[in-house]
Image (cartoon, rainbow, N blue to C red; front, side, top):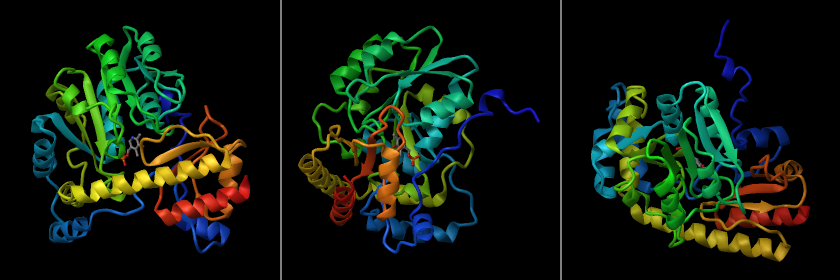
Length: 358
Ligand SMILES: *Cc1c(COP(=O)(O)O)cnc(C)c1O
């Protein structure tokens, strides 16, 4: 067979370990997963009813353009419906954007420790990834700008950055957007934006009015708690959205995902309470890390990146044996683990296990 040469040696994405698998392998009855930045408080109670109502239509294809959900979201964000596109998670929108833009030999710029899906999809499409070192765990936009060449098609900015949790401010972002050539697409991944409480965080929807080359990606998987349903969205200039729509599968989001997303959007009280509980969780965890003498990056999402001062993969295994699944294996930060902010009880269980190990 003759597969694309650039995909032959690609690694398969390694997700956080499933709870069931850990219970089975280690014979544990209590296992908590703080590894995939899922919402520890579930989703809005309105979601269940919306999904149940949709069961009557299970044999009917979904609305491929998600018309009603698009209208709801456009009204909420104050943008036009043709500026919005939905994907099977924002992961799919990353893949579709790469598919729509890259040909073999193009260049793309991203941080050296960020969401791995940008690089894997760039690799798949044959683009060359230029990975720019983070500065103090934060995107170094000046250094990224200096790497832009005539071959550059896309710059990826993850804000807050996964896994470090740091943010770039509005002034840093606009300084960058003012200088980057306007035929370079800037993808701003805001998977965690609802969690951010820092006043310097960019109002990206406002920035779309000025910068046609900006594409904002968001998701229902994190604060809305719909990770299993796979639905995310992009907001951009109608021309950019049109291009991505041209490479999209016709029915890429299910009826259930669309109905659940509409219900979830209508319950902003749930979102606000999750944001609040997440802040309390961050305060608690940071206080405990201080007490334990561990350093961490300022956390703006629903996860904290903390230095455990030993090989992180060893700590991963040790915590696993105590029934706590976290994330490790970040090549630039071999002694850091990423832990999702859980419920109060989960956070306490995690700290207790960690303290026994350090
Ligand atoms: C979780 C995550 C996503 C994608 O989530 P989907 O479930 O595919 O919507 C995108 N970007 C970042 C940085 C994430 O952490």
